[in-house]
Length: 311
Figure 1 (tube, rainbow, N blue to C red):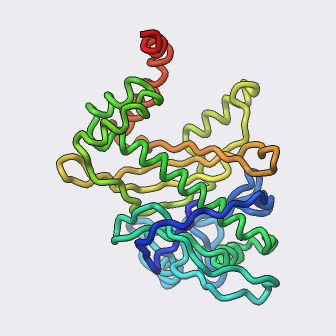
Figure 2 (cartoon, one colour; figure 1 turned 90 degrees about the horizontal axis):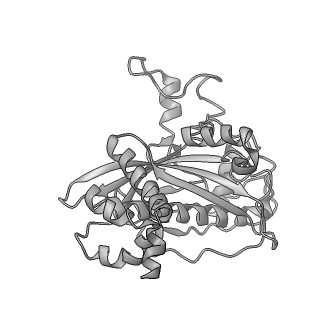
Figure 3 (spheres, rainbow, N blue to C red; figure 1 turned 30 degrees about the vertical axis):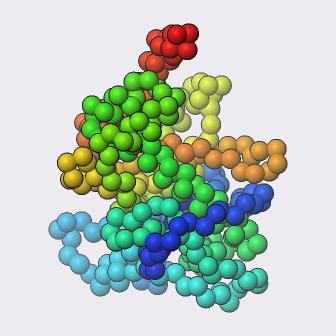
């Protein structure tokens, strides 16, 4: 998930996500939990990092021509190739649209929103990653699912920011009545000490690195399969978000996103679950996570919800 290209920023509002009942093909590395994902960042087939070595230069390591040629091709905002062609590939048998959609996700480096790749760019990117068996007629559905999941991930991040961008004090007021209570008082909070909306600075895909929480859930699933049993996340992303506090300062917050797949709907539509939370990079982030999840559990377990309903 999370492919954005940044060569042509656009401030336009996002277009509606096209509906499709087509299930993404099993060959798609973004939606197949059992598929072998490609190491990240992607290696260049001509001049790249030797197999098995780390593509990121150590602080004291001298620069070499191979390092420069490889890393200079990657966009530092998303660690993807700086430019993916819109041209039709020689192996391609059907036409793929080249129109790109603007997301609802504001960019932190310039004005405007991030843009999603076109189906043609997505297909070309898959070929560059070595996925030559991707069905061409499924690419448009893949792009629609990709865009839908990114919009959902951003919506979860905005929900975290609405709780905690004003500080831990108001954050606890937002969390102490649980998830349902926050929804009820969201409009009232919006008029209290408003701050600017968050923006996405950059992001990084880390499909080969499970988060600590995902590892714990995977371990618990082996011990208690009836309660915790599920497939590991098929993808993991780190999104770096610009938070503007009430005093006008900006702060960078890293969010971790685990992407899980679930059995499809009876209609055949794919089902996904996103686990979005701030990374525990600071004591503040740890407190935010405890406040949100702990507040919801305590509100329901202590009977406060039942008492409010009765009154």
